Image 1 (cartoon, rainbow, N blue to C red):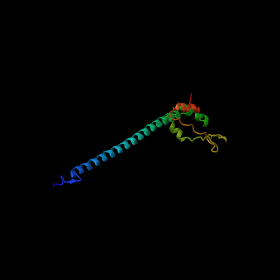
Image 2: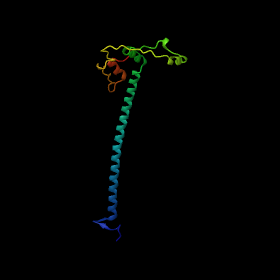
Image 3: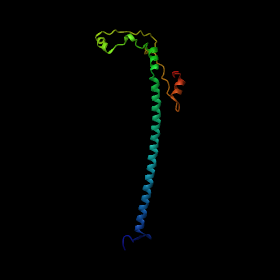
Image 4: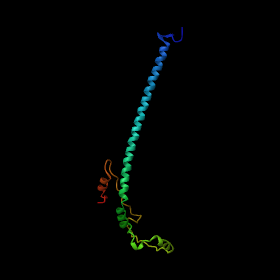
Length: 150
């Protein structure tokens, strides 16, 4: 009797080997499908995080563009630092720069009063304005804090 025709409990040995191989194949496909589903869920989670981060980047870029407005910076420099635009008589031409380098610089002092929050290290500065609420716009958040330039 050959090995393929040999019977075990009424079944041919080749049938039992094929059945075992089929069960292993079914388990392998099930495990591969389960792992692929898990990976698909992880990919979806990372893509949601990317979308959220892109929205946060857009929000921060809008906030930076608001904070970098020249009119706002000029107002803050005049209000808190006492700075003003350069007078036309103080501007130098490229030819006059060499002469200005040779001249000694005139040192200016700024008078600081005690209690001035811009210069006094003992006074806590005002807390920063909150960022836009979830789902809100930068303009809505700035309007709610009263910092939106009109």
